[in-house]
Image (cartoon, rainbow, N blue to C red):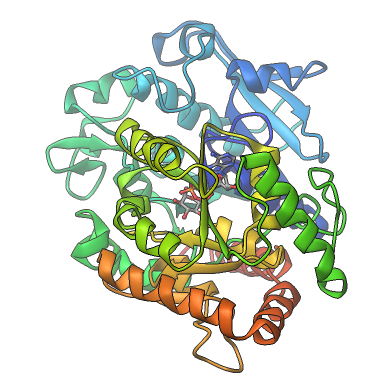
Length: 477
Ligand code: ADP
Ligand code: GLC
């Protein structure tokens, strides 16, 4: 099974969110199962730098009339073949994968066009793909180019990692993208008067996917579907919700190089030392008794952290400490900075991106709070579970699929709240504080259960492989 995964992010070279982690881990897991999974991205400077020995395997003299384009083939640190599309006019400058508006359509039109051509017609070594797996809107046109060209072609899967980002552009760009006029239609790439890359993928791909069973259901309804709910409900028979996994090579508390004192479920007392070290690192009082709550997140409206702010005083009033690592919305950044200033030693706010600190937070926090308004899958709650940090989450998307409330004596591994309401979050925080205070032995049992659960990629990679096999076997229907 030859699979080409197409996206705009890839850990550890270029990461904005969890998609980068998935792009590194899923192909690796598929390869472990014997599939020939490869990855394709634009040759952003960070990607180019990671491929010193790459060689050209595909070219186009004037891709989308943006000049000569070349695809280089190299390998990731994990040994996954990585194709990088070079086109100096489009990807030479820095600016991150989601910058460069309003020209972004050209960047990702070029990526989709080259990925489709390479997957179908082959690279210089004659490698063609059985499956083109498009991830999020930047890859959305690849399935469209393949379907529109007609003739024999790889089968296609369009996976939604976040339906909030759709890649909408004025219809006038259709010609620049080498799409035929008929593609701009309700039965095509048109959506609300725009040309939508995600809608194109969702219309033209053979199968659709997203990253948790609950999110697959939620996006079929107006509250979460962002206008695409009708199409998704219509195609629900071809829509799969497959939970992401954890890359256990990178996320293992027993071997994690970011931790001073690695630990496992049988050496949980060491975890207490990790908490003390984290408190010191963050300038918090070294207090083993205080339950340490925290957040590791992009600061965006959808992550629901504004629901947490009005609860901070009450949380501290219950003897807790709070630490945040995140960046994004300047208003939220300032609000958490101000909270840290108002409560020195009790609240810490690290504004920025810090991979090592993120690992130490999962290893040292008692509770990770993820109050997302919507969460397609969420990786941080799974990292937390693996590191014996109990998640307190809103019951939505992949959070609802991975966290069970401690009220369930047999399966509990954290806390859930339902309504998008600070008050409801406050009640859940109070329940967690009370549990921590009143029943340390039960807390340790929850930690052990959380750490024992299998959140690795193997099961989900198998489900992807089954899906790919059924697609190739039945010709796509
Ligand atoms: P999303 O992709 O919506 O941001 P996920 O939970 O799927 O949410 O993935 C977030 C990823 O980004 C995780 O790997 C998490 O550890 C990481 N992350 C988020 N914020 C930070 C930060 N400030 N520093 C380091 N890692 C971060
Ligand atoms: C998106 C989602 C997140 C998911 C990640 C990887 O960034 O917001 O919930 O875990 O993609 O699929």
